[in-house]
Amino acid sequence: MTHRALGLALAAFAALATMSAAHAQDACALDLGRGWPPATENYGSAVEQLFFAGAKPVLSLTRLPARSVESGVQLYAGEGEGDWRLRFTEADERVEVWSGGKRELRVGQQPDVVEVPMPAALARRVVADWQRALSTQVPADRTAQFHEGEVLLFVVGETATGEPLRVSGLQPACGPTRALMEQVGLMIEATDDSDEKRFKRWRKLEESLDQLEQSLAGATG
Image (cartoon, rainbow, N blue to C red):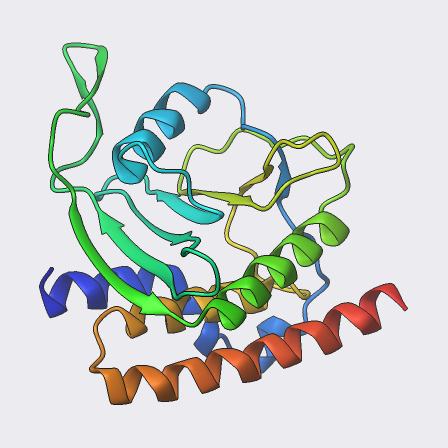
């Protein structure tokens, strides 16, 4: 994958990292809900199946943009205490297209994939903190709503029923879940780093997780 493609993806996922302080202090109103947004499941499932390629990630964030190509981040568990696999995936061409008033889902393509090892302890912490953030900040009775523009699909861990926790909606712009976008940016950057630079990226990710945990403690305590 080219540096330009990674740069565009990073900008799309992590733009909120540079949000002005004034905007960040606005009243927090998350537009995230549980499950699939209406009229989105077929499209979203097609993209996820294309990106996952038959494997089952423990954590994934998939971006369904309004016009550009779809992209996403996935975490796959390693064997035993071995490293996990961090993957950034981007469609070669847009999956959902409209032609003659009919929708086509182009799932026969080969997406661009970049995969790097990630320390198991750090990966497990990302999964645990994301699951805590999404489950506490997005109540179980708040269903996902339909949106015309870009939609994010979060899937992480398991719920009490054994099913993955699925949260969908607009990019969070406030509250503890805003930190997830910063962390996505760090993970995307890590897929384009040398081993030495990646180690520094992991340290920044740990610091962001520390801040997320403090934010969650304040929000729930």
